[in-house]
Amino acid sequence: MEAHYQATALGLFRETSLGQRPLRCRTIDTGGAGPISALMEAERMIQSEGLECVAVVAADTVGSWSSEEFLARADGIFFKLRDELGQPEDCVQSPAIPFGYDRITQHQMQRYGLRREQLQMSVTLESFHASLHPKSLQSQKTEERQQDPHLSATESRFYSQFTTLEKVQASPSITPNISLLECARRADGAACLILASNRFLLRRNMWGPGIPVIIGGGAFAGPLYPPENPADITDSLYASCRQAMERAYASAGNLSAKDIHFFGLYDCFPICLVRAIEACGLASPGKGGEYLQSQYERLMDAIERDGKNLNTGDDPKHSRHSAIDELLSDPCFFPINTHGGLLCFGAPWEVPAMYNVVEAVKQLRGQAEGRQIPDCRRALVFGNGGVLSASAVAILARS
Image (cartoon, rainbow, N blue to C red; front, side, top):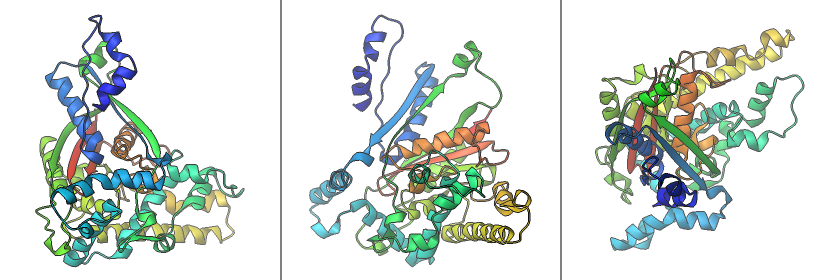
């Protein structure tokens, strides 16, 4: 009833009680998939209930909580399920969510040969994107560092914040296959999206070319928590992400990954990102790690080439970061989470999928300054709840 609580606290029911317009409230609880589920519910309310404008709001303050408070909230539902099923205590241990994703990681390693190093590369790639977004948590943590007078503001921000593979590998372990830097960055935050009908926009002279529209969506569900033995995990049992992607592509006119220019993929842990990369079609099943490695190697090659340019003695205005600039101008270079994702932008509990949508809108409008994907016309956004339990996908396009 969170939506009703907030609407009451804000006095919205009093404002609408005079017969001006009916107020509808919906509270969506699909975990991290919630913002995408809410976006699709807002679309349904406009199409089926005659509403003209719906606000989708998400907010949380887990960044201000103590570690003990956060763990109690995060572990609670999984411990409750364990106890109700009469399972032994060591079947689900704290921190429950990282250990659950560790089991999925082990399955992917055993079946497909996924390597730890490939998973860790995802953090470096996300860090690169986050370093170019001034509002990412990563940027805010380092914005006061002294700027090198020989570098531009963007270049200084990138080099002062960049998380190298070595840093990720040296990070303290949380589970056998997940380190601290491979966990979503806990933060306070909020986001709001306004979804409006065409008639609403036309009446207010707001409709025009370039406005992002929803053209497809899909949602599926799976078990809340994986079995204790990774050998008991099957791809068919944990297929909600792939199923949601397939439904979204079909509802958008039988599209595929080659038709999408920006991918906002949920990445609470690297394995979640790997599974999403495979499910959306950027890589074939079992090849998500190889995709990350190829993108990482492209980034490292560009950094190495630019480093050589810096040492040539040439005029910096003509030589500095040409390889990085060339990389950013390539729409095929890691078109995922250009804001930095949960791993580097910030993760206020169940809000982050909303950030995926906000970034998608910026990309579609050509407003992603410094990280714009060339000619971005379609975007796919994905939210995940539980441990690969709830999956929701929406596809947006530039009108």
